[in-house]
Length: 167
Ligand SMILES: [Fe+2]
Image (cartoon, rainbow, N blue to C red; front, top):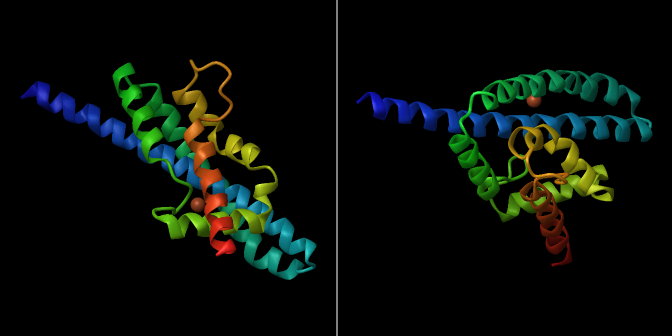
């Protein structure tokens, strides 16, 4: 019985870690997206909108990001190698950009990336989002700049957007 409870605890930590990593990627994306939106709206001369609408939302995002970052760093330090292995596998097969659960949403996210100009340099966008996750899960993979599933996730969003626009 004690053994079974111990296993449940270990699985629960894996699930929590996936939840924190997802939250961290989501909030980091939000920080970057609101920064780009803020600058874009200002460049259009809409300073009132950027100051009263975008800026207040933007100010909250770094705090959300910090929560998930600290939580994932704290939990990562407690994970056994076997748990870390599971987290890596599950991230690899399940990663998706924020709010993407199907092909339509994938194309929508690609539209957003194109609108915000993220597609000019998608790999550095992915790298910024994935930096802490790479340190926590993939530190032994020397030379890896971004976990490949994160690059692939953003690239496929842009491809889906372009394919939909071409139809
Ligand atoms: Fe947020």
